[in-house]
Length: 142
Image (cartoon, rainbow, N blue to C red):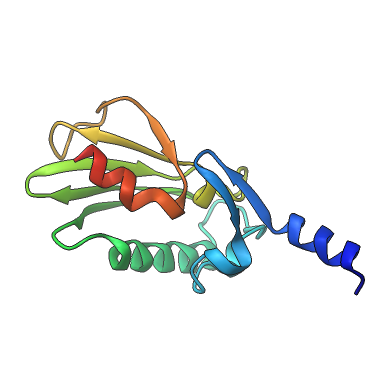
């Protein structure tokens, strides 16, 4: 492969997030890499491929949360999810867009906002971050 072809390949694997530029082949967690640019199944029943993705995402999120932070609640939707993160009685809400229509926003553009309590669905101002900066953003909010 020529140098030009290698550069083109690397650029194809680069994502521009609101908080930086990332190369998913090296920076996404191994368990989630297969879902970058992935075309999920679609239909009236949530596909096994999405259910596997959601399970891996939840496990990864639980693993990267700082000490003392936990997933308070996990809200499964058809092809998207939201979660409430808790730390010392303070809460943050996170949500990803439907992975069928916005394929890589699950790691490039995650909605995050503060919550007054664990049932505050209006919460603070909507903010967006990448998976790479998610824990930092959550720590600043709560």
